[in-house]
Length: 214
Image (cartoon, rainbow, N blue to C red; front, side, top):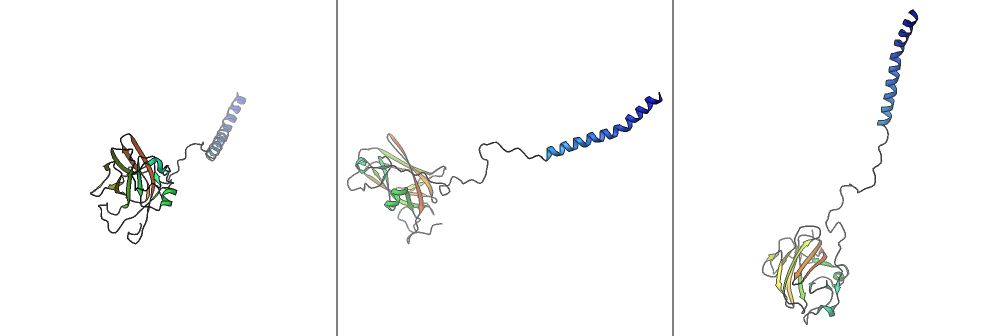
């Protein structure tokens, strides 16, 4: 009996040390797990913020580079057949350096100090002579917008400023196109049986008769 009592007392005296050793081991394991490096993210779409906006000034402008051969345009006699943008039958004639217009589809616009036609205040504008093929007879609607944006262009046919230029095809139609600032824009040209989208880069051209570019 005395021998059994001694074994029990010995076991009880060893129990706290074993428990302490077990607690210490568990603590070391938890510490090593918490200090382990985080797993590397798997490949996938980047979530980086601060990327360029849709502004045409921040990204390349995918301008239209389709130039119609003069013989196919069938324009009224007396109209220039150089640098006809798009497949037709309606072509924009712009007052821009012909080489630059042809090379990069750039439209040079300004904010003139004085103008003989209505225009939106502080917008950039350019004269556009719309040339129509003699093979087409019918209505023409022209609107415009900034690329990758809902921002609209504006137009003037001489009487008032509007978001849509409308006329009936007959040789040519003088007008002005307006944009709020430089960037990448598109003319949308509709008529009976066709719908064209012509993309161009609008740049600010400041000369002696225009306000400085902002």
